[in-house]
Image (cartoon, rainbow, N blue to C red):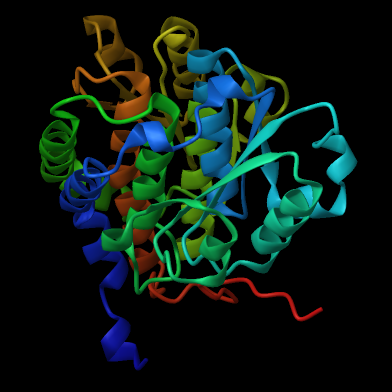
Length: 350
């Protein structure tokens, strides 16, 4: 591809997400969820992937265990094939849920191969490319073909594969969720895109911290990765309360602290952001609903107001923060379509 051909792929893919979610959920509505494995029928569920999809797995494992009562863990694909004894056991019937945008990532393919050789359970592959080698390793495939991307950094593929994992965890999608996600996603982007562009252009901000607890920690890690990949900015992710245990030493007036607030720990998490603001940081909170005291505790506030369960509304945290990372890249003089040193697929030679 030439430089001109690649321009604005990432931006367009971020903005396209709400429509792509609706299309993907429409496709899955034609599947029979009862034909797919249910977490409750296994001794454990392992969610796996590499890079972004490993962070997706961290999100999925937390919510799946809450909803199913089954032990659920997230493992990098490399850990599964290099150190299988720590994850798999002969006495544990396991459901392996492997997510990969390309369905060609070597590490994930090897993890599935080893798992299938052990014959310890079933495998579900979640991907945007259902005709690639990895997808052929499982009889259970959930594909999001509308989410295929031309950019290297995952945006709409990540959020669409999140929804595919949610569909598997819940055994289908609630009525009306597709249209509600599209409307909610479009509203958030329209309402907050300009403010995220302005924030991205603030060159006084040199360090970016993304905080999330519970399932939101996986999302915080993913947005941290987007900021690193696209803009080459100093960016880290932490659990909210853990941030006080050392990392906050780096907080000053050149810091942006973004909090992905949950339901159960909202007040405790808000207190962390309030503390960081008192130390000079600029603070941004994203939350489902916000009492009046939230608006005075942080510098910037994004309220989802989706009315959806945590499993389904989680994707709404992502687009505005992906836009922040993309715009930061542009302001740093970089092309977000072409992150330094990266390829769309990691293929091992040995």
